Image 1 (cartoon, rainbow, N blue to C red):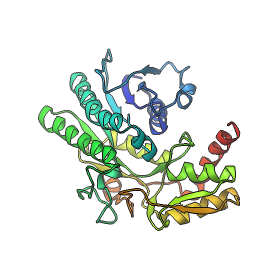
Image 2: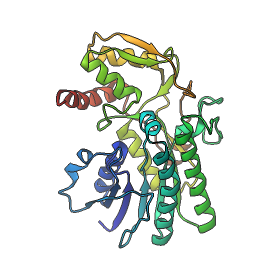
Image 3: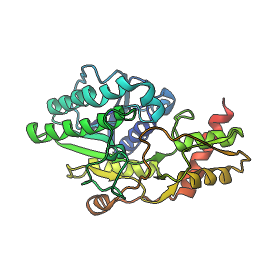
Length: 314
């Protein structure tokens, strides 16, 4: 345990899985989270581990971490449409002020830093599938702009620190991910569909359901992020599952898996909702030797077990 990593947003869905991954690879973890959208439930099993430390702190404020730091993983941010529409200013601040503070800490500690970006930097894409050299089609003043533009700024700031200060930086563009520790009220498709189906409620689809998404199981995603962190690649890398499915097909898959009698109902599509989303993972395959291994059927079974326990516990 001679390496130490700071994980911001470490009590969140992805952050908590990353904390585990780092500890499994003999890296000490300092988890920083203000618990705005994260939860101590996600990391309580790590509290007895000598190689894990939790600090409650808002990274948009000055960050001081004593001692040596080797890696910083910046995963603090509201990440679902419900969150960033309810918390627009906080969303903008954590990817601007927060990223600035994190990069400053990396510069001070001579640490390698990986920034969590998103497929949302591509906006409602005119190129399909989306590769890293596509600059995107984003509405900067639309309701989703608070998240999309925050992440685009975060990437720009990261590259500035890399080019001007020589900071070792990595950028991961994360596509739709699912798995245990997602919040039931997250607002994203999978937790919404699963919780509605388990409760026997109507399954709500926004739009006509023809829009597509690509869902990556969390273990695969975390493996890709870790490989990118340990690589020498400084350009953005897409990590996601290229297997594309329409939202309507996905709702029907969830309904069938659960054996639910829920009806599927349709509501208006939110403003600027992307019509298609599928990663081109050529760069990840070539540079990292990474591609997803868990198919959607298996991933959904693992996730369903977690959600069933959550719903029954309510």
